[in-house]
Amino acid sequence: MEPARAGQEFAEALAAKDAARLTEVLAPDLDFRALTPNRAWEVSTADGFVTDVLPVWFEKNDHIDELQMLDTASVADRERMGYLFHGHNGDGPFIVEQQAYYEADDGRITWLRVLCSGFRPAD
Image (cartoon, rainbow, N blue to C red; front, side):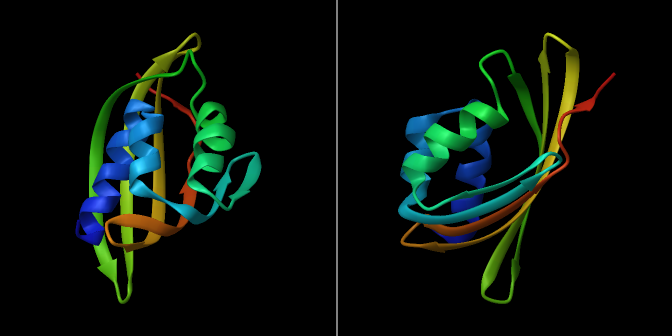
């Protein structure tokens, strides 16, 4: 799998909250860091991402209705992706945008840095 395809797989799996698919696209020894509006995140395994990050970023009642935008590009020896989710929860409709830089090896993301907008109200 090409690096850009790994980014697309990640964004689609994240939108689906698909833990099994995320574990397939993330390397077992993932180097992950992220900033969300209220917290810095760091895990060192794909399993850690799936168990410690995913259920907090998108809780059980947070429903992602659509991956509205996905943009990928190369930045020298790294890849970049930006994606926008539309969803809803008990507070109503929301949007979330994330920008990420990553490296992939053999079709799996090995290094990933994410910056998140947080849940923003949507009309």
